[in-house]
Amino acid sequence: MSFHNMLYSGIVVFSLLRGCYTSPLKGFSFPAAKHEHRFQRWLQIIHKEHSFETILVAYSNSSLDVRLEGILEFPKPKVLLTSTQGFAYHKLYNSEILVIISMTHKVHDDLMQNAAQTLNFMRHVRILLVALDVLNQKDFQDISLGLCHKHQMTNVLLIFLYELKEWPSHYYQLKPYPVYHWLSIAMNQRTKDYFPPHWHNMQNVTIRTYSDQSIPKSFLYLDAEGNLKTNGYVARLILLFAQHFNANLQWYKPPKLGEVSHFIAINKLVDDNLIDIPMTMVVSATLGTDEWLHRSYFYQVENARLIVPCAQQLTRKEVFSVLLDVRFFGLIIFCTVLFSLLHSLVDYVFEGIMVTSNVLLSDRVLPPILGQSFVARNSPWSVLKLLYILLSFLGLNISTQFSATMNSLFTSHPYHQQIETMTDIRDSALKMHILKSDLNLMGGTLLPIFRSLITSDNDTQYHEMCLNFNTSTGYFTSSSFWRLLELKQQNFKQKLFCSYENMTVYLLLPWAIHLPPNSPYKKPMDYLVQQVNAMGLVDAWYASTFNDMVKQKKIALFNVNVEDKVQAMTASDLYWTWIILIIGLSMGIAAFLAEHWHNKGTRFSD
Image (tube, rainbow, N blue to C red; front, side, top):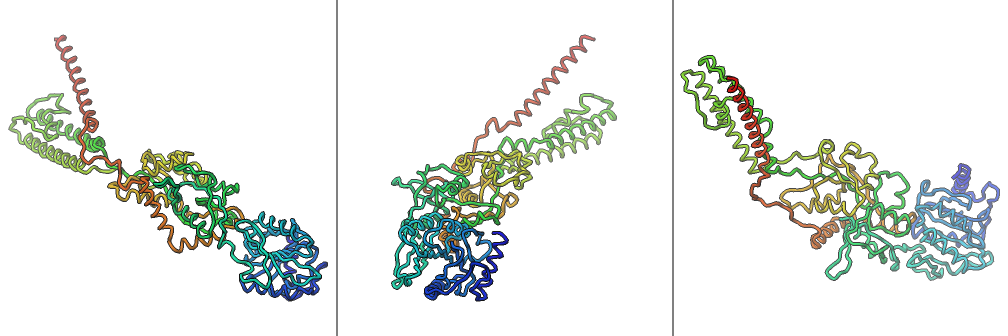
């Protein structure tokens, strides 16, 4: 709205509030008319039924008709609108208004179009069409009915006024359901409100819908008789909407069971006017935009998180790698070299014996360090006896600790290190599986772990991998789906998937039902969403969905892939034992060949 138009409307409204019914502006004079008092009484009745704060008057001529002077005398602020003016009313004023559209002789398309644009996102308000001096009432009704349908206006009254005639005996009430039509009602026979809430009974109107089949929001299956059944806390909301407001749901196209679609694809059908109410929800990170004006109240507030495979127990092969690690071999080598040097030093100092092959690896030192029996040198020197005693205690300690650790590890295998943070994901070899549509919505949120991401376009395969606990990757999912996975693995001996607070990507995600702009179903949907949340039906529907999935064998309450508790040891379990054996044999063969070559060369030289 331009500054000139806003200033102009402000002057008119100010003048009306002060009771000045003669505008100082040229072309605006409102003389009394004979319908003045009847019109004013009619407005009083409408106001008594349901109060309004402002009257928006749209007219097509250069000045307002004198027969509508009763409007200006009504003690409420007025906003005047012509076919050349227009603005976003919902951004400036209260939405509790009464709209009066005055047209002379015929339907003025430009005035209706301008009024519709002004009433964007609030076309459910009460509208009174005043037809002045119309010659062909039937044509006027047909054309105005089509425009009301086009602009999604559902709460409309139509009255015909003539200058030389009395106050009309009938008025026409718009009935939007099941199809748009006018209902003639006598003025003196009215038994109901002028503007009843038509959405309370939609007269079996057909509502097009389609499901994304994303569990647990929507679960489609065939019962024992082969009939299509629908469950899920979003699907049940749409079913309740149709049942409560007497509407008939119709699939946009026959659904294929098990074919999961992204919620963006389903909501695109709404934007293309192919369906009326989607059997899914929509989310947006921006709450201050006009896109939320044609969505329902928030149905659910969830969070989005990453889930990763839980740390699993080490296998026997991995247990051997823990036992026979670098520290163990380092201890054996260090003690062997140290005591071999000490033994060689005692032999050289007290016995004058020097065997160079025993300086670093003595055959009298290695067996006791490993806890094995050994042959001690028969020597009178106490220092050598003390050395053997130390070797015995050292070997006993090493063998005892090794045996105890081995028994403990094989009795109850330890676990791998659990991934609990984004940093752990970045530093691990684990890949995170995510849908491209979700990644596009998130922007750069997962940039710290982008090297760990793998993307997919196949929603069906993605959900099957999550639901069937494919632990080859981690996943990005909503809290409602994570709740389903937790219920599924609550009886598992060991959980397969875990999630932690540090893996929460979005703490608060408001979800709503996406509707077309100016949809006539927004007000009833808002009402139903509030009632459903107030009565806690979402939790009941969630439990019902889980129960149906168990009955349909989509979910197993116990881990069907659990391994047997007792298993025979296989050759692969002794992987590190074979490695040590091969290394030992290789070193022995190498030493044999070296000594054989050395002895052979020495013998020939002699």
